[in-house]
Amino acid sequence: MRYTSTRNNSVDISSAQAIKQGLSEEGGLLVPVDIPHFSQEEIASFASMSYQERAYRVLSQFLTDYTEEELKDCVAKAYNKEKFGTEVIAPVYKYDSSVYFLELWHGPTCAFKDVALQILPHLLTKAMKKTGETREVVILVATSGDTGKAALEGFKDVNGTRIIVFYPKRGVSEIQKLQMITQDGNNVGVAAVEGNFDDAQNGVKAIFTNRDYQEFLSNNNFVLSSANSINWGRLVPQIVYYFSAYAELLKNGEIKPGENIHVCVPTGNFGNILAAFYAKEMGVPISKLICASNKNNVLTDFIRTGVYDKNRQFYTTTSPSMDILISSNLERFLYLLSDTRTVKSCMDQLKAEGKYQIDERMLSKMKEMMWGGFCDDAAAFASLKEVSEKGSYVMDTHTAVAKCVYDQYVKETGDKTKTVIASTASPFKFSQSVLMALDGIESVAGKNEFALLQMLEERSGVRAPKALTELTNKRAAFNITCKKDEMEQMVNEFLNI
Ligand SMILES: *Cc1c(COP(=O)(O)O)cnc(C)c1O
Image 1 (cartoon, protein in one colour):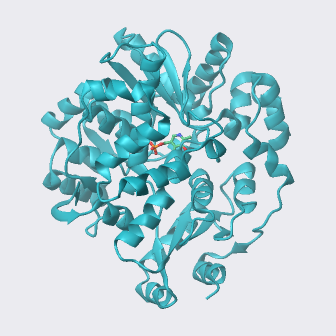
Image 2 (cartoon, rainbow, N blue to C red):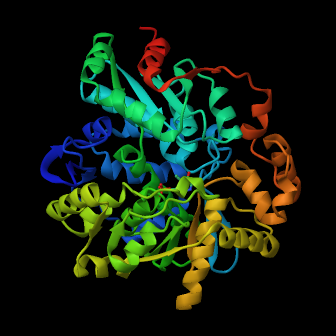
């Protein structure tokens, strides 16, 4: 399989190169030139396979320049019971006769980004070797919370890599901060930056664009890379769990081979739902993709009208990982609906005016397969409470947005086709908001994170993940704060150069 750019079809590179590079040189995203297809028999045969086998089958279609042994090694290192606490890796929970939750949060940081970030480091180190790179990779991340920790857990102790995470001193939750500053591993570095997320992100961008500094790093045998969600190496592992969800439903006798299902995804950057779209194109019988947004509903408007307009108020919500106005992975979807010229023109307009419009043909193609909806915090809280009361199942706030939007879809269409809702985080990761939804704001007043974890355990009858409860006993290895203009020095210190 070869890879090209969404903005320039003369780009022609291998999958290892695509993963190493992350982004195409002219700013486009890297995409496979074809979408591989599985027959219904092959898809049905996934029912009797382990998650690891399913992963190998899907990845090997896209990462054709990796050997079978290499891919199986990556899969084994990423997806095991030790890391995910379950052999199934992504279990499907039956809520009622038509709704199933695909639990993507059993990994080490309790959110779905682990599924990609546990395997990416292994794909990346192999990509480095394959492309003749001998320098050590330094992954730099600016994080508003979840991605930083997931990247730290993925890259820790992976030979040939270093990982350095900057988080804003103001702007991450107490538990997110604890998760990061107590990080173990012999190749990790974590520092707070005085300022907000933009300050941290701008600092990292400045390092990435400073040629002199990169040369200095290179002279010390280091090369920078990023682990952000537009890297193909993060998207491709997410396709696997939609095959796996379908296979689990088949295995459990919930559906017949070939039966259509819908998939509903709480969406921010459009990565997770794009993976579902790829699974659909590859043959998984998915009929509708339901795109759920919170009050930052730029995607809902886009799906309904064909106008993408980021010039609007930004809201901070209780589903913070979806508080996004530019969904970068949408570019890949546009490419699949059109061509490089159209994509380039849309992206140029987005940059210049914060806005673009697609034509009628693209809009109707999109509407055929997608349905968009959104809800505010109050509506998501009501869904969370209802599901807890009716089904004794406690969701996190992001998943609650998806359930709420799914209910809107059913109300509007009357369509009761069996639907898999992507559950993207453990409720314990957002204990405070979840308890507020269940018992009101007074119930959480004055409680610290650990008291909240305990309260939610009692309330839900489920044990909190050890990765969170154990934080209280862990040593803070990184009590480090730096100023915005000291970030390069911080990197030097972590790298000992
Ligand atoms: C990142 C994230 C999302 C959004 O996923 P995208 O792939 O960016 O659309 C939703 N929920 C949680 C918990 C997340 O961490």
